[in-house]
Length: 157
Image (cartoon, rainbow, N blue to C red; front, side, top):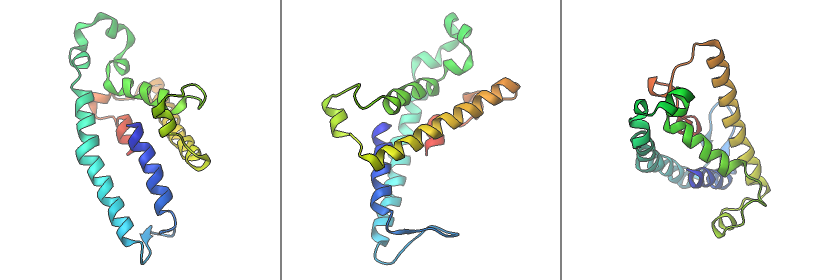
């Protein structure tokens, strides 16, 4: 999941010069192949990677049999979902300080200043959605993830 988000930052950077802002975002002449390539990349990610990831998270045994676990009943419906786990994983990945973990993979995936700004936008999306979810829950009108609420993956797509 985190690799896909970092890849999307790379694509945005690559295509930034090709996109024109206005009433519509469209490719300029000469950049069309990059834009088509990006659209193909998005479709590939949605169908071949994101969909199986969502299905995998939803099919985890711990979440299928949540009614059998009395501790999960005590913690509430939100904590019974795979989306709750994904939220935690994304926070660990995108909220950590650069100095916390210096593994080879982290160095390979390190971000420059511009990419760090995009990372901040991802954090803002996650926080904004959390605040909206908390407001809905406080009002008692929220619906659970299994009842049609958008998952973290849906929100980031």
